[in-house]
Image (cartoon, rainbow, N blue to C red; front, side, top):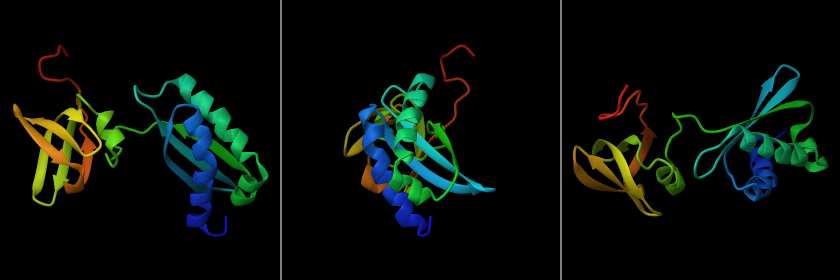
Amino acid sequence: MVDTSASRARLVQLLTPSVEASGHDLEDLSVSPAGRRKIVRVVVDKDGGVTLDDIAEVSRAVSDVLDQPEAEQLLAGAYTLEVTSPGVDRPLTAPRHWRRSIGRLVKATTATGTVTGRVLEADDAQAVLDVDGTKRPLLYGEVVTAQVQVEFSRAGEDA
């Protein structure tokens, strides 16, 4: 891989149709050196979450694309493929991330401060958070950073 950003962008273009055809979103792609090999890490997600069967299906589809001559040239050598789902620490950067976080506790930073609340609803323009019992609309354009908060037990649930 001579030009890392251009090669990464081209790999994303090559992989996206296969990932989307399997009903998933390509959330991230990274290629990093690991000795004589490279690690190709593909992060996928879908509404309702990703199962192990989904990971296997996407792995096969991605592997088929990476075995094509153009992808082989971009990778320039041996690689190990890792297909995974996003972790809980993934930032919320797209409307679909907010939609998939309905019911979850989120901490968002805006230009005017920080707000923490449970996502009640989300569309293409905004999310509505329950902040201490008050509905608080949050336009995505106002958000600088946002992340799901890890909860070991929610209020009102048995631990």
